[in-house]
Amino acid sequence: MREEMRAVVVRAPMDFAVESVPVPVTPEGGLLLRVEACGLCGSDLRTLRSGHRKVTLPWTIGHEIAGEVVDLSESYSGPWKEGDKLAVGPLAYCGVCDFCVDGRYELCTGSREIGQHWPGGFAEYVGIPEPCLRLGTIQRRPAELDPVFAAISEPMSSCVSAHESAGTGLGETVVIVGAGPVGCIQTSLSRSRGADKIFLADIVDQRLEMAKPFGPDEIINAAEVDLVEEVLRLTEGKGAHVVVTATPAPVACSQAVLMARRGGRVVVFGGLPKGNSEVGIDMNVVHYNALHLIGISTFAPRHQRKALAFMTSGRIPMDKLVSHRFPLEDFQEGAQLALDGQVLKAVFIP
Image (cartoon, rainbow, N blue to C red; front, top):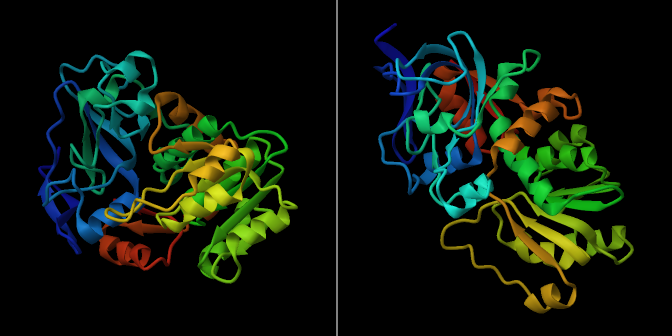
C-alpha cells in the first residue's frame, strides 16, 4: 500500500487545494476504500465558503462516495471483502436513541458522518469506520451503475425519504421550488410515484434549462412572475397537493404555504442560512387549510436501498443529473464553477 495520496485539504474558508497527505490507516473494525468517485454537495459548498460547525479545519471533506474495498481491518467481521464495489451512505447512526430503537434511523439524535466526524472522500482513499458499517447504509454498488452515479446515492436517499414522508402519490400535483440537483431528483421521483402534474420553479434560466430533461410539466421563472399566483393559476385556484422547497431561499417557505391546497403537504427540504432561518409564515393559513409541514434533512438505510434501485431503473436521466465530471486534481476549478452556479452536479474522480 502506498504511503502518500492526493486529497483535497480545506485550510480555511475559500482556501483549499489538492495536496499530498498520508494514506489513512484502515480503521479498527472497518474498511479502506479506493475512491472511485465523490460528489460535490451543497453542504460541501457551504463549508468551502464559510466553514462548518461540525468540521475542524484543516480537513478533507466529501461524503458522496463510491469506491472499491482494498483493505479490511483484522477485526472486521462484516460481509464485505477486498474487491467489492460499494456505494457509501456516510451516516453512522448511534443505534441506541429512542428513534434508532424504533427503527427510525433518519431521526437519530446521535448520528455522525463521514466528511465531518471522519475525513471525507475527496481523496484517493477513504477509511470507512466501524460505526458506519453497523446498520446498513453501506450498500453494494449495482454492477450496471456507473460509480460516478453511485457516488450520489446519498442525496438521492434523502429525496426518497422526503417523498416517503410526504406520501406523494397518484394523480397529485407537486410544486418543487429550486431547480438544482435536488430539485431535479425531486422532479423525477415525483413522476415515478405517480404525480400527475409537476411544476418546477427557480430564478435562474440556466438551471431551469438544465432541469428540462427531468420532465416537469411546467417550468416557472420566479424572477419573472409571482410564483404563488402562477401556481394558483395553473391549478385553477386549488394549489398543489405537495410543495417541496429544494432551495436555501427563506422566501420559498412562506410561498410554499400559500401554494399548497387544503390538506396539502409542505416539505421543507432545503436548509436555510444561519441567522436567516426564521421566516414569516401565516400560521392561520396552516391552521385553516389543515396543512402538514414536514421537515426532511436525512435518510435511513431503507431509503438508500430504494435510491440505488431507482437510479438503476432508468427512470431518472443520471447522465443529465451529473453535468460535470472532473479529475480530482481539478478540484479547485470544478468547485469554483459549482460555487458560481455553472454546474448542475459535479463529481470528482481520483
